[in-house]
Amino acid sequence: MTLTPAPRSVALVSLGCARNDVDSEELAARLEAGGWSLVDDAADADAVVVNTCGFIEAAKRDSIDTLLAAHDSGRKVVAVGCLAERYGETLARDLPEADAVLGFDSYADISRHLDAVLAGERIESHVPRDRRELLPLTPVERRDAAVDVGIPGHAGGPQHVLRRRLGGGPVAPLKLASGCDRRCAFCAIPSFRGSFVSRDPQDLLAEAEWLALRGVREVVLVSENSSSYGKDLGDLRALEKLLPQLAAIAGIARVRVSYLQPAETRPSLVETIATTPGVASYFDLSFQHASGSVLRRMRRFGDTQRFLELLASVRALDPEAGARSNVIVGFPGETRADVAELERFLTAARLDAVGVFGYSDEDGTEAARMSGKVRRDTIARRVSRLSDLVEELVAQRAEERVGSTVEVLVESVDGSPVDGGRVEGRAEHQAPEVDGTTTVLGAGGCSVGDIVAARVVGFDGVDLIAEVVAEVVAGVVAE
Image (cartoon, rainbow, N blue to C red; front, side):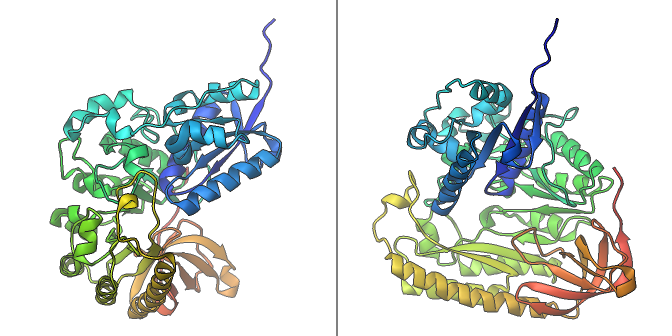
């Protein structure tokens, strides 16, 4: 007589960035294929898998707190993700509350590993290593070698998408590539995410079609450096070719590119993003600073003049294009004059959204060993000062949009056609979660996933208020 295995359930908690969200959906698909059922609440689960973030100190603390909370549920706890990959056996030793700490190479066998944990077996954690050493140094030599290396988010293929959506809504990330070849002095990501590896264009198109069939209207291309896409495929203009193909997929109304390196944002890419129908005219540019001397110490390129010229080239093609960035203050050696230069740039740049972060040392980075450290209280004052300036500047930019017409992807609906309706969504210049939202009045007949044309009539910080001026531009495509 064949015995039926007892049902097993797992709660999957995803922390950090959209790239991690894609990895979590790959893990979910692998677990389901291995006979595990996914549940939302740890109280209903046999095990809890926490996909951790290991980017900065605050994210590490959040990951540790989440693992401890999962342990308090009384369930078996498994740590995966960037923190687990980055620290491996050290994390396992220092955090006995986690029943296992698994690196990226364990993802392919995640179901079997979870079976072992549930059975009370001990799994030895990996010894951390620099994942950049796993692939050839030359990008064009990586394509064939990459199949032998565990790279989260690169599973599946044209005939089989290894992914299970964990959330609903009309927006989903699509992983363009993994890893990074840049050597920014403050960033540890390449050491635990590895060298830059592009996904095959056909895999991306297949996955985008799969998402569209599940009601996704906007795909957000995510990676550590989207402007490098294709260099290991032998085609530096691969992204320019891919974007129109993605935009042409039935059901996809908007394609958005995130995380562009200014030094690699070539004119042909600017033109493609700014002028291709169905591609959001949106530029997520990683400036990080504007003082040339600070950027050189960061192992980056550019300065105020070059960055303003890049933005001018964007707006020459589309004056209404969205632009956002992040900046770091307090980098070793930063002076008052450097901060003043950053302020000058931000004032002239007219960005729609800006994230301001204070520098902190990261394990294993060049910057952690640099002299000229800025005092913590000084960094805090500079962050506060820049944040106040940015809040004023992005509100000014939002005010400039009053009177313009925007196309809003509806993400929530409150009200009905009877009472005039009120919907919330995002215009082209607003990326999910980071760039504000647009509230549309008088749109009670809309549904989540619709795109409506609306005239901007007001603003609240980065958020816009608009009124419907046209019928639904595009509706949801049924699964």
